[in-house]
Length: 84
Image (tube, rainbow, N blue to C red; front, side, top):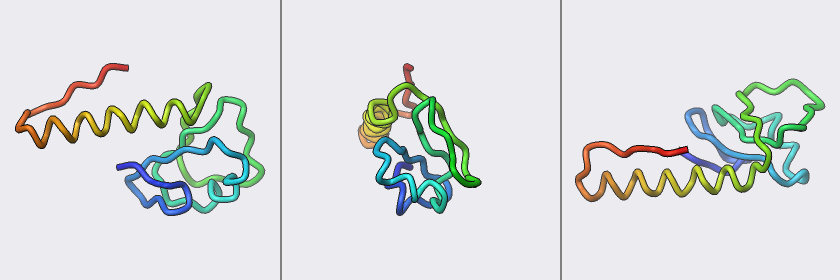
């Protein structure tokens, strides 16, 4: 599942693209956070970081794939394939 960085729970993935939300990366319960490759933590982080060139675009692609997978399930397809 996907979530907002400030509200995400265990099992969800979120992203940090805007520095004004950096405070939440230190308290988020998300299982993983997509961040820019050059992100440098100022404190200890208790989640997995996924380093990418553009966190916003990467999260958008993930969101599109998630919606595609959900639509396959609603249409009765047994399995969705992801292409990265």
